[in-house]
Image 1 (cartoon, rainbow, N blue to C red):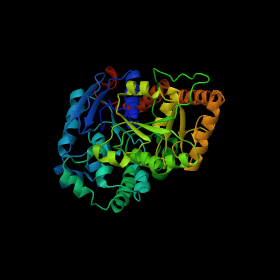
Image 2: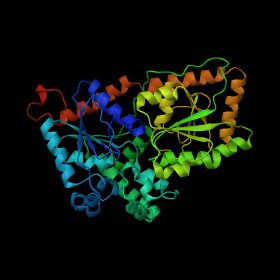
Image 3: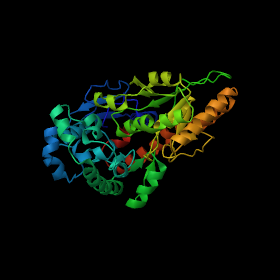
Image 4: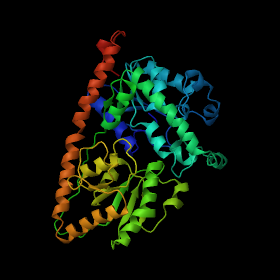
Length: 424
């Protein structure tokens, strides 16, 4: 995996689902973290976790091992080196593993090189994400997230890179690589059923949809006649460009549209890491930066709110924050893109908007419902919670990941001793 399990973001939830599902299905799980955030994050002590050598920027720039391996995308070169590949193989031998699951296309080659049956959870289609972003207002240093170099000189250099041209090239390379992985791996999955079907058609190979499991120990309690809470929760690290872009959309267009419509006092409360370089870009009176929280504490914070806002402009996999908010009992307010791949409808499980005027109508509706006692709002939250619990239950994901392992282990049935031990 590319980050420790301690993270509470969208991809962190998916990784947690994979590990928990495999463990709940009765398998021993060994986690190997390649790289990870520059600021150390404690590893999860509930599973065996190994921090493997990071790929240095000197190795990325040289890229000889990646080129010899046939890896052309920048994403793979950020995580592949001869040292790292050897470390993964040594760990697989030492732990006597029978199958390997890779966190995304970035680590697919490391999984394949282990010589065991291998499965790749792509999360979403990076090629399509980059194609959507190539005309966005961004720089390469910002795009790299926790893989960004630490020195100011390197950051200044990366900001001069023509990102649009680079993303167009990267999107083409990743598209070919995603198709190749889908055809050659012993199994492939995406979070979104829509994207899974699209890749299956592209590659001519079966692709599973394996979303995140979402559960919570706490629940938002709705009280009739309670005052309207105008704080909109937004969980998401601003190291991810899509999250920062969403906050900037709120600042530049959405919140001004609310005031123009006579709706005042609404705030966006951001829960997640905010890099120093991004703080000036998201500074506004209507934005409150709450900081990053471990998952259970994050849930405890979120249930103090009534509404989640996910102002997502593009359809990128399944929006974890929408599902998680529904499970917690909040009312999700998002765009059609943020609800992509979900069986939901406006006014039934979510409130949808496409621009500032539509958001003003949605929040105006919530204000009217609150003035009438809030019963329709509580009912919508209840329908959202029932939908999310039915479709993203941990037991269902455990069953589906157990099927994946059965197929992988069957491919390695000739290995000595496999029948005598649990699958690792």
